[in-house]
Image 1 (cartoon, helix red, strand yellow):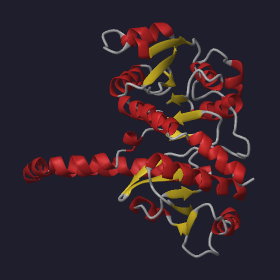
Image 2: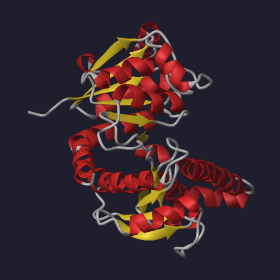
Image 3: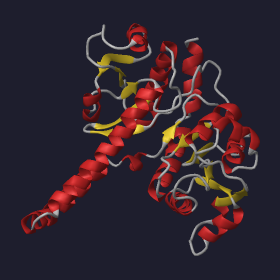
Image 4: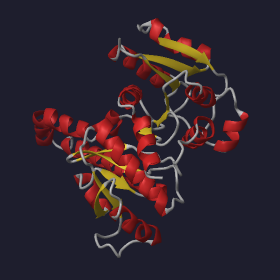
Length: 336
């Protein structure tokens, strides 16, 4: 018998909540028969958004939570004070085993702090990283860490590399994934103190396929499958990636609409261009999992629309089906 996977969704988190969040949840329920979604948030607002939508009521349940943690609140303080917030209530569902995973487009700081304070770290995990999948010319790569640990140590980065390798092999299906550390050059002696300390540790790590340094310009070409860095560098890479992609698409559209001839050309190349742009749409890959916790926590973009929420939910299904937490736990305990 097929196991039902239960996913708690923060209905109040994100720029487009609750509308787009709830639409994404409904899409996921339509697409997968093996999931149940717990929509956590203000009951009256959730019911209003669900009005007129068709879905299996046995697989979509409302869990009341009257408070909302905003982006301008101190994350740790908000987690401790707002016990009835959608983030805290949902994370407690994961902690108690009433949900297999949690998805939120809300406050990144609150999700990261709550993940550690409520769900808790696995034994042996020093710092849980945030690890989004990013599109490349050759498919996708995992950027780890992109926002959780801005003052990481070399031992943290080695753990990131191990966890990222396990994730890419089991969830994405890339065998023996190539691991690289972000650097300002290919030479081993280059980089800041953190990179110089981490490089030999990765080089001597038998659990990963370490290929050396990767420069930022090589990332979009898929030069590595797992891209290791501390969170400050990772977040800059991620935001530049997203911003540049959006700017280029905007300029291409502007150019195609500039003259009558270009408009005719645009009509001819529209199907191929649309397919190419879709390959570089980060929302199709879901959110960023926080690896190394006792339960799955996935952070979607703050401006996530329904498709990204739907994909983040499906991402949780794959993670759970592959028994990722157990694989991470076993690998890390074997290397303590």
